[in-house]
Length: 151
Image 1 (cartoon, one colour):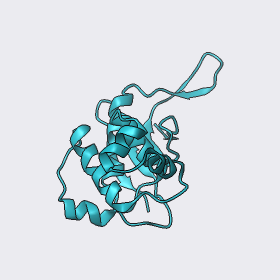
Image 2: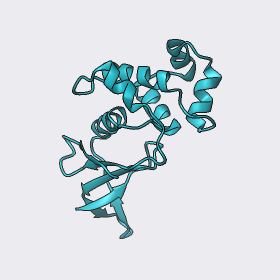
Image 3: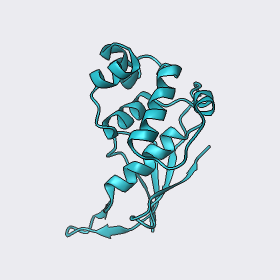
Image 4: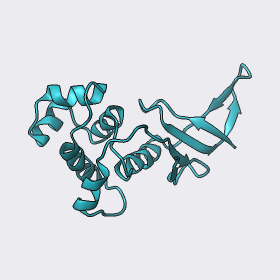
């Protein structure tokens, strides 16, 4: 079992612990992710439940997991599509009110476990100096789960 930084999601802060490392035909180490949908569900859960603001990349991840275009998300948030684009590219911070709505919509749309109070979620949408990694338990690919939000 090994630790693997999972970047195929478009995020650079996802770490999977307990994955199996295999050798390919050339003898190179490789990782197989047998349940990508389950992994992405665990990542979405970690983003939605983080006690600090989400990054633009995390917003893009949630938007695409929810199957929305930038224009569709912008319409839901009563914003211009250009605003969503700027948030996702990291040109400006994600608006805290919009972020709270995105989190709530992601919980509903992606059927994420647990229900949080709107006031509690709104309190999490505050800027932070850095984005800690989302550490996912990969030892059981049929049941990926958030281990911790590393400090």
